[in-house]
Structures are given as C-alpha cells and as structure tokens.
Image 1: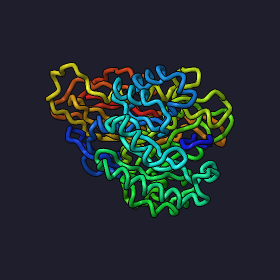
Image 2 (image 1 turned 180 degrees about the vertical axis):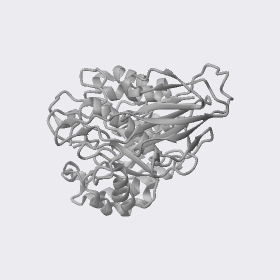
Image 3 (image 1 turned 180 degrees about the horizontal axis):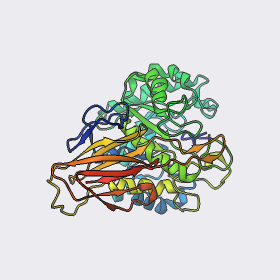
Image 4 (image 1 turned 90 degrees about the vertical axis):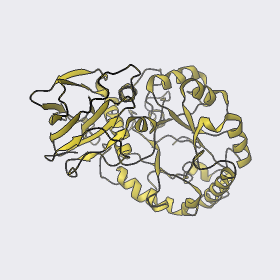
Length: 436
C-alpha cells in the first residue's frame, strides 16, 4: 500500500428467457442454474453511471498531466472519479472535469487531511452538483493511519467519531439525496476490523467495500477473500446488513513482481466482467483502482492502472471505452426504434452469464459471457476458454440480422444473420454484445 489516505492495492440454460424491453433494477446476472423466468432488462444509463475510477489529481503522475487525464475521461466515457479531499487542492481541476465532461467527484475525507469546517468550505466553493458522494476514512486499519497523530492511538474510535461528526455536519446543510455519505473502509484482507466500525453504521447512507480478488481470480469466483458475495457478507453485512453498497476500490494488478498479478490482456477480460457482475449484484458504483500506472513496472503499487505510465492505453481501458460507448444512446433518429423485438434464449453452457440493457434511444443490448477462469496465477499461465454456442429464438417481429461486438477485441460491430428465427452466437470468456 502507498503511504497516504487513498492507497493502492496489495445465465442461462435450457429454459427459455424472453428478452424484450421493460427496465428492471439491478439483480444477479442470469445464470444457467437460476433461469426460470423472464430475464430483467436494465437501464443502460444506470450501468454507465455505475462505473468510476480512482485518481490522485493533485499528486503525480496526475498533477502535471491534467489535460491528458481529462482526455482519458473523455475517451473512456467514465463519469465518476474518487479522490481525496484536501483543502489545498486546486478546485479548478474537478470543476473543469464537470464543466467539460459532466464527470463528478466522490471525495474521501479524513481527520488527517481536513476538519469538518474545511470540508464544508470546500464543498461550498466547488459546488455540490459537482460531487456524487462524500466517503469516510479510507482503510483506517492501515499502519499508515494508525501512525498518524490524528488517529489518537485508537484508530477505530477515531474513525467512528469522525464519521459521526462528518455525517451530522453534512446533514445540517445537505440531504442524502443531494450528497450521500459513504462508510469508512478497512483493508480488504481484514474483514474482522469492520466489526470495530459498527458504531459508525448509523452515520452513513451507503456501505463501502474494497473487493479485490486476492489471487487474481475471475470476478465470478466464490472463493474467500475474492468473491463479491464474500465481501458483501464479511464486510458490508458485518457493518450494516443489507445496506446499499459501493465497491470504492476494485481491480487487477499487472506488476511483473508478484504471482497475484495478472497479464494486461487477462485483466482487461476480467475488468469488463467485474463491472458487469458488480452491477448485476446491485453494487451502486464500482471505482476501479486506478486510472494511471506509476513509473516502476516491478513495483506492486505502481501497476494498478488502466493506462500505462508512458500514457499508452492498456487493453482494459480500450475495452471499457468500447463497452460504455456501445451502451450510450445514439442521437441519430432510428426508424426501427419503436419496433418491439424479443430474443428468447434457448440454449447456453452452464457457466453462461447474461445481462440485458435498454438504451435511452430504445435500442436493446444483451451482454453475454462465460464466467470462466482465464489465468492460473500459480502456474503463471493463461487458460484457453473455448467459445460455446448461445442459441436464441427471435420473436415479434423477426429481424433479418442483429449486430454483435466484443469490447475486448475493439468493439467493432458485425452483422449476424437470423435463420428460421434462430440465432446462434459462439461466446467465450470475453463479454459479447448483441444489439437489436
């Protein structure tokens, strides 16, 4: 972990699913074991809004390259950043991100960096409309925070007291709808420490987790210290059972120094699935850690980025940009927009996953993938995942073609014909988009 407040990090089966248009709240991705009824349809804008990224706008390698960072937000389509609130920070940077791109800030507060009065002055000077949330102490059980004078020798009590004071101060001026307050966090491998923060549960609207897969597992894993479901049980529910939740840190490391890291190409496959899997499970927002790499390829803390230190895009950045672009409404008129088309899933492998979205222009997009492991960290070797057929039946009325794209392969659309109402698409570990 880096010294500081914001640290770096150590559907379907034989039953048919009718995929026509209505919008549903997020719930688990349809699976082979659980599909018995109509698959829900999600608002594509809600998914886009669920994606965020961690940054350090006032520290290197961000501070001297702000215009480049701004272009990265523009190219990626990401609408939210998470960063520290420091009274000395340059307000022009979050202000410009909002005014140019409608990107909003999710700000960490800490007794190390700001008093409640300083926080309120900062919010008033910036403007609350430019913020999406305020979050409590980041990983207060980290040795760095414990060594700070502000921790007062009792980290958990200090964090709880600070959270209560922050909540009461904010709520005197802003409602939960205007500026939600997110819980403090603990280190991802110390879930027992969240029990020490339970006195703060009444003073937050959303619980935060840092849901890293400890050994580079796939996002859909059920293993301890890796599975989203495990983090929800061991951290969220230990703190505030059933509360709305954000993953304020999650991601994959590409360092060349440790076995827990994964190659960039595999991380790109997993990160796309991570965002989809988290959204399907009801995670309000997932902040990937982080936007930019540091300078040292062999340093663990320097290799969490979506973009390399030299400014070149990693495969994950390209894939995220393609995914978000595909789910963004097209402003051009669509003469077929009012046609109501449904695709009934007839057949898929046991490890299949599926989400379907409706864009605000009426276009339907299905996202399908296999929840397969693509990398063996113990052997440092990739695992080939052969595509398996997903078979759909088209109804109401039957189009001649649909379009498919794979964000991890560039996101280019290609037409696929529908023959005798049947549509068969081979899908592997990479998420595949089906637009209709």
